[in-house]
Length: 535
Ligand code: GDP
Image 1 (tube, rainbow, N blue to C red):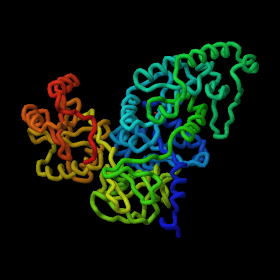
Image 2: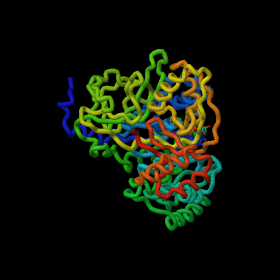
Image 3: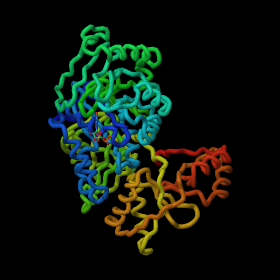
Image 4: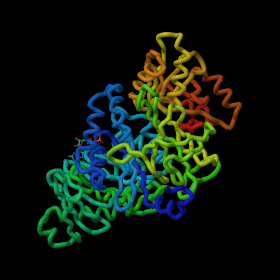
């Protein structure tokens, strides 16, 4: 049997170099599911188009969380999809959207190295994309952009680029340029390769070869598309003059995004994005821990938990903690140190996530995700190693946008309520705030489904019948200051707006954007944070 001592550093370095870990950011209906499916199709991970779609409709046929719950096996399987393409191992992490949009969606983005931004070219930049891009910006995550649905009437391509640049504050470097749109969509011109790829509708096959004609001045093109080529030449001149050219350094710094045009449903332009991911995006890099930076090819294993999925089997309070490997080589049956609990655990039934099913993992390297089954003793941000105290940083809690006041029907259940909320808070299911004044608890979330999940879990796991009521709170900020006296004064004068979160940090709960701004202006020596690190 292979043991970790027989693995050479070169093997680990080789495995790291061929890995890419990414997530998709998009607004609902932009085409994330369709694109995911086509990516898997290319890699041979699935044979038939429609597989991912079927899973999605199974999940979204209902908005009732308990029914979504019944599908939980499915949602775990599609949380992480690992597939191979061109001798690379690609981990695609799902960023839950639609009604299961939650803080998990944000946190998944802290575990990826690259993000693929999908924009519906008819609609342009939409609300959820803006939020998700903000999260990417925190870590300077490189972004690849796909303008989707060119087989429909879309907005003007130059206008779309302008919008991305002005709204999302990231420079655009178009790599392909569309020729026409909607019924007159002819294909795309590759600005770097100087070739035209001709559009054909309805491809369900991975091995589809689209006709490619090289050279924008090629007479064959002028013959077939006289009008379109005239127009294209004019546009290309404009694009060369007015937009940025691709720059690898700026891309990796997250300040410039290569932009591709295509149609996910027609499989058109999808291979180009996969190639960009392999050729331009980086393999897993170094990660910061409290005591030092950890390089991915270091021999000892390390990693951190960024998501916890509960109730795989409610009867057993069974949970899966999703851990991103940061270094070394994970092998089935290996003993790991759970740093917060200072306890060794032998992880025998770890799961990995092949695109088609949940499978037992044999080994994993930096960038891979492994699922650790547990009974509720793991928290968001927990780190695991082979002994060294490597507490990873950069796994934040995000300031919630939605708030509810919690009341219980039976006051005798108060203790269970606190216990349940403490645990759900640690799992990242919801955030819990205790106001400095009064005894009611306040819950904070970024997606409404989070409240349904919490109500249902409080009932099923802790026997607590809780009622959630609306509040006048509109946003939260964690408050810190070097000036302790000032902070004490702040606590005294604004105690009716202040709370402690589950970890005891001070948070300001604002009633409106104006209220928040005024408070920030009045207390210039205090820092108001939109995220907080795991304690
Ligand atoms: P998601 O919500 O981002 O996962 O979006 P879906 O992948 O479910 O797509 C939303 C809708 O747009 C579906 O009806 C898709 O069939 C459709 N769609 C996706 N890609 C394209 C495309 O390239 N062209 C057209 N016309 N429709 C598309």
